[in-house]
Every structure is written in C-alpha cells, then in structure tokens.
Length: 472
Image (cartoon, rainbow, N blue to C red; front, side, top):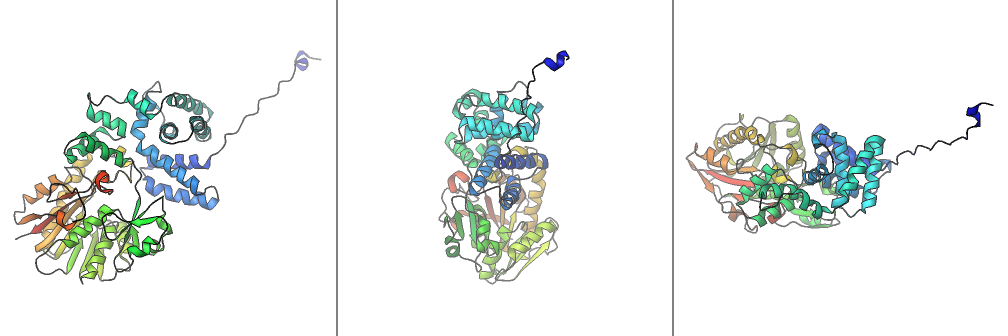
C-alpha cells in the first residue's frame, strides 16, 4: 500500500454559491445603465421594475426598496464618494466603476436607510459576489466594514471641510452637489446660508408625482378620486399623488386626458395664458414643444378661448410625443417638426409665444439626480447661443402687442436673466411684463418682474419665467 493511500481523506469544503437578491441586482443594473449609457434613472427604472413584476420576482415593497436604493445612491453620490474615498487606499478614479456602484449601494444602506448595519454589509457583499466575483467582494466587504464604523453625521464631521473654512465645499460634501452647482444656486438665491441649505436639502428629497387635469378632457375632481391623491398647491389643474402613487394606474393618464407634469411647468403655461395682450388673441405658439406637457395644457387653454395652438419641435421623434400629448385636444391645433431658430412661419404671426429653451436642467435635480454629476460649467457655453437665438426668434414671431414667455428649468443666472438682458438690448421696442400678479396665490416669486420658482419654497422644480411684450 502506498504512503499516499494511507493518508486520511480530507473532504473539500463545498463552494457556496452566492445568493441572488433580485432587489439589489436590479438596483445595480439600473446604476450601471446610468453610468455606462448616460441613461436617466427615471427612464431606466420603470421598465426594469415592470419586468421584475411580470416574472413574479417583485411585490410592492420590493419595488419601493429598489427605487429607494437607486435614487438614494444617485442623490447622495458625492457624499458617499467622499466617505468611500476615506476608506480605500487609492484614488477613487482607480476603482472600477461597477465596484463603486456596489459600494455606493452599500453606503446608502448603511448611512441613508434603516437597514441594520450587519444586514446592509452582508447583503451588499453577497451582491458583490454575484455581480463582481469573490475577489472584489472581499474588497467591498473590507471597505463597507470601515464605512459602518460611523453614522452619516460622524462621517460628515470627518470628510467635510468646516463651513467657516470653505462654505461652498462644505455644502457640496454635506448636501451632495458639485461645488460649481452650489455656487451657481447660491448666486441665484442671492446669498444667505439658510436658503441655500434648504434648497440643497430639497434637491435630495424624492418629489411627489404631480398630475395635470387637461381642461376639457379631465378634471381635478376625477383625479382626486384616485387613492392617495390630494390637491395641488398652486395650479387649479394639479393633483399630487402621495405615498408613491403610480400614475400609470390612473385611467385618465393612460388615456391621455391627464398627464404627469410638475406644478412649476403648469404655472409657466398658466402665467403666459393669463398675460394681458392688446387686440386679438387667436394664435398661440409653443416654439420648443417637446415632449408636450406644456403644449397640451396651452392647447387646452387656447381651445377654451377659441384660439389655435401651433406646437413646434425640432426633433421629429419629440414632435411625435407632442402630437400624442395633444391628441384629443378639445380645439384645433397643429404639430410640426421645425427648427425654432429658422422657423417656417412669418414674423409677427402669433399673439402669444412660449419658448421653454433647452438648458442644463439644474432646476430638476430632484427628479434627475444623476444630472448634477453629468453637467459641467462649460455646458453653459454650449446652451447660451441657442437660448439667445430661440428668444430672438420668439420676439420676431410675436406681433406688436403680443407676449413672449421665456422659460427654463434652470435657475442659473447665465441661463435666465443674463439671456433676457442680452437679447432685449437688441430689441428696444419691448418691455418686461410683471409676471407675479398673474400667479396671485403663489408667494415668494422674487423681486420681479420675472419669476423664479424653487423646490424648497414652492415644492416645484426651479422653473424660471420672463414675460416680454412687443411694443413696436
């Protein structure tokens, strides 16, 4: 008998397969889509959730947790990156992006939810074993155990510079916004620590879904019969869905008689519709109409007065979305695909014109939290010429005595007052209309004559509107 045959047999330790957690795997897939494809979470997540429900993997609580993990991780990414950076021995740029996504998910569970720390670590490490492999899962485990040593306040004391030393960097780390965004928002607010902190905190809160009852097609009374529906704050056509209400379950929304539309966008359309014009009021223009929310509301308001709306959108596929939003409008309208800076209509054709111009979207960071990490200061230079061209065309498209509304979903002064001031220098036969009396129930609209809405003051996106009348 050989020596080898006399050795005692040692059984192999069985290799445990990682346990697949559908909720966290889905959250990871959504984050990867946002990172790899520049996708938006609000577009990526719904089809993933729908597919999971159809497979029987998810119930309502699972969907709520997955949604919280994705949006919470994206909103707090800057804060979590600063904390994770303090727990690794290399620059974050040298850590693979998929690993950073898993670490972000783990950090959010540890620091931003009520999940017990041991469960947050073990569940995230198990996710790492599934999507990254055993080797990198060990790295994730080591990092998260360091993260778990302090709560969020404890970490912020360690990683955020004191406010007295560097106010903007302190706010950037504590409230998870890029420093340049903090600076821009602070300038737009006009100073004061309380206001900027309230705004940054509001940007990190999950907004309620707001519906619009399109006049002549639906009513707020109909929408208020839905579960968890309450009246809007400011718009007479707004209804808010509380407790995570699902707009796709609302019959009027499915049929296009109502839509999902932030109350700030509704107020912009209402202010333009209520602005006094001299003479006729028969032909309205939405010059940047995609994807169609404001056009649908304007079209319905125009129909109530016997006016006609022309909705113009440069991109054909977005023009298709506008046509879908307007389908069923109670009055006449037309949708065209046209470049708003080189329009096919004659100058002076319209009584009312709205241009909600392309912008950085810094006013909608509650809804698109990933946008804050994608935008760069140099993006402002890219938008500036187009914004000015669209406003110039709008002023040439309205007749004498008519009104133009210049709107952006950004409060950045370079996209709001700077654009209006520059363009109006070239058009001396114009005047700014005080927009504030047109929204009499809405407080804190600013010094005028333009208006600026804010998430922390109005519960809306940070929409800006200037109304301009042609006088000659």
